[in-house]
Amino acid sequence: MSLLHRDARREPLAELSRFRGEFYSCLTARSDALFELADAVLCGDGPVRSLAELSLVGEHRRGHGGLYAAVAKGRVDTDRMRQALASLPLPRPYSIVCALEPGRSSWTAPLDALRLAPGDDTATVTARQLRELIERLITAGQWQTGDPEVLVIADAGYDAPRLAHLLRDLPVQVLARMRSDRVLRRPAPQRQPHTMGRPPRHGGEFVFGQPDTWGTPDTHTVTDTRLYGTARARSWDRLHPKLTHRSSWAAADGTLPIVEGAVIRLDIDHLPSGATPKPVWLWWSGTDADHTDVDRLWQAYLRRFDIEHTFRLFKQTLGWTCPKIRTPEAADRWTWLILAAYTQLRLARPLAADLRRPWEKPAPDERLTPARVRRDFRHIRPKTSCPAGAPKPSRPGPGRPPGRKNSHPTPRHDVHTVRKPGTTKPKTKKSMPPRPRRTG
Image 1: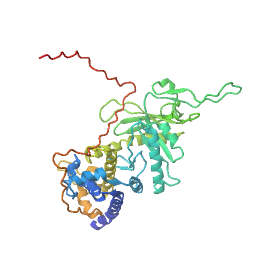
Image 2 (image 1 turned 180 degrees about the vertical axis):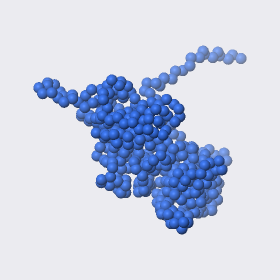
Image 3 (image 1 turned 120 degrees about the vertical axis):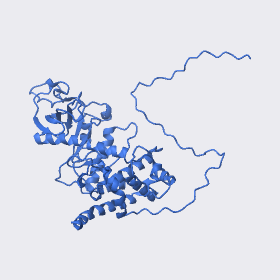
Image 4 (image 1 turned 90 degrees about the vertical axis):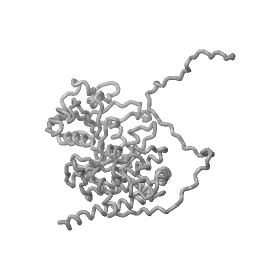
């Protein structure tokens, strides 16, 4: 039994070692320091609070000065890193930057990270990011002709019809939440013979907040759930927004397209938190949805919340937002290190033992959380490849002579704060009475 157990773990160990070697190859400057920094993130005893504390982890053999220099001046080949992440075995379906596993789980597979600049259009940048990601997945053999289309799930902050329009030539379906105050249009009615004038492009209104405009739904399903009680889903087919030359469509030329899809309304009995549940409106880029499609889509949307567990681990345990990074380039480097560290945790998942606290309940091997796998990574690391070389002994420099000013001050970057147009108040000088002249 022990021999079979070791044989079963040999393949995950080889996959982890291969990724560690590929990750080291993606580091093109200060490779050893950046690689050991990622190991320190994984082997720390508790949550990451600051970069300086990572230099005290035993797996990090360099001082805190070299650690800060690695983040500030190191280089990561992001294109090669993206290709390495896309070539790993992945579950289905896909989210925007993470792949989700079947069933409820706190594990995801981060695939890409992109920093948005001030003024960027979210839908355009996300569509470009998704296009490049899908092309990498196809190149890596993750999707082949005949496979189900990739399901992209997004929240209400994304323009789902625009995403579907920009990705219409790829094997992609878009499912996104819509606000409850949206107004969509039905297909244009059939033109009657001998009718004068321009034919209409849009039909009657479908107002989310007015049930008298809904009509009879095309599908209606009822499902009993463990957490939400009875879930009722209704869908209406071939609805589209009436687009105008504003916002993200302002630069479009000519007649704007008609992007049809199916609208799903989900109603549940109660929430696990005890709060009052509100209806959820979803828009799917496909058409002619049957009962099976409707149940699959709203359940897939609820699976999107598994990404929140990953972001919470990034921030609270791996310290994604803890360091005070000075430059955007250093922030990108640190983000890719966090993604590489989390990917190693995912690959080490079948190798880790359950090092639980005395007050914690035991968990099966297949149900270990990322935080529990991180506790045992220190014991898994010596069994894998470690291409980083040992630090060379050196003496610290003399530093700046006393009394001499710093001729290379640290650059300061303005923090972009988004405000509503027209809310900035002009600065006015405070009226003060003139000071009396001193005569004594």
